[in-house]
Image: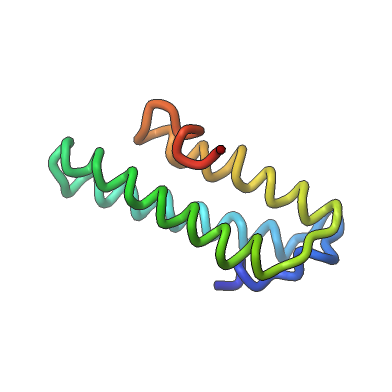
Length: 103
């Protein structure tokens, strides 16, 4: 939840608290996906990964983008979080993870 309620409108370029929140969020997602993959059949996991990505995308829109205002650094950080971190996490489990998150 910290990630959703972060002060995106007044970030500095080296905001350590934001970096830590981002790291913890994507680490949690990565470990959860790893556990699911280990414990599910391949076809079931493939379908579930699409649903999980859809829920994350929806949550980012509803809980982060629509509820916050962003300054330049906040926009850059959010862009990095989605385009570098989140997509990288899903790349291990989905051939083209960009298709899941980018419109």
